[in-house]
Image (cartoon, rainbow, N blue to C red; front, side, top):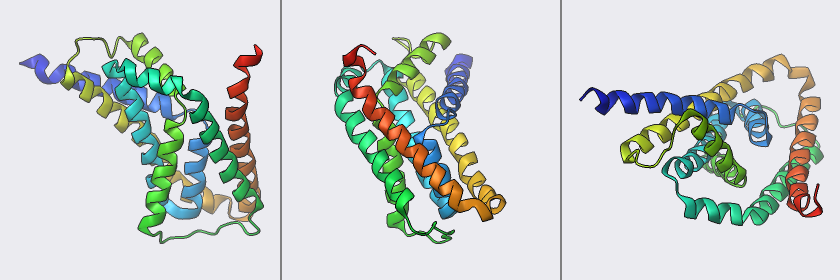
Length: 216
C-alpha cells in the first residue's frame, strides 16, 4: 500500500527535475517566451511557456513509455521538422528585426493572440526531434522510463516533467515585466539583439540538415 503512492510521487519529483533540466538551457523558444513576456505581459509569457511545456511533456511521454514507433517516425522526419522549424524561426526573427517601432507593453491580449502564442511555441518545441534523445539519455541516467513500469508510473513521470518545465516558464513569464521595467530605455536594442539571436538559431537548425551529410 505504501508503494502505491510513494513510488509514483518519487517519479513525479524526478520528472520535475528532468523537466527543469530540459527547459532551462537558453534557446530560441526560451528567448521567444521571454520577449513575449516583456511586450505582452505575464499572460502572454505563460501562454507561450506552457505551449513549450506541453511539447516537452509529449516528448517525455514518448521516452517514458518507450513508444519506438513514434520516436522512429519523428527522427525519420527530422529533415522536414528542422526545415519548417528553422524557417519559422528565421521568419519570426526577421519580422521582429525589421519592425520600425519596438512593440510597447500590451496589457490586454485577445484569446486569438494567446492561442497563437501557445501553438507557436508548442510547434517549435516539437520541431526539434532530438529532444527525444535528450529525454532518453536523462531517463536512462536516472533509471527512469524502464519497461514494465506501468501506466501510473508513466503518467506520474510525465506530469512531473510538465510541472517542472512549467515552473521554469512561469519564472520566465513573471521575469519578463521585471526586465521591461529595468530596460525601459534600451528595449529597442534588446529587441534587435533578440531578433538576431532567434534568426541565428533558425539558420543553425537549417544548417544541421546538411552538415551531417557533408561529414562535418
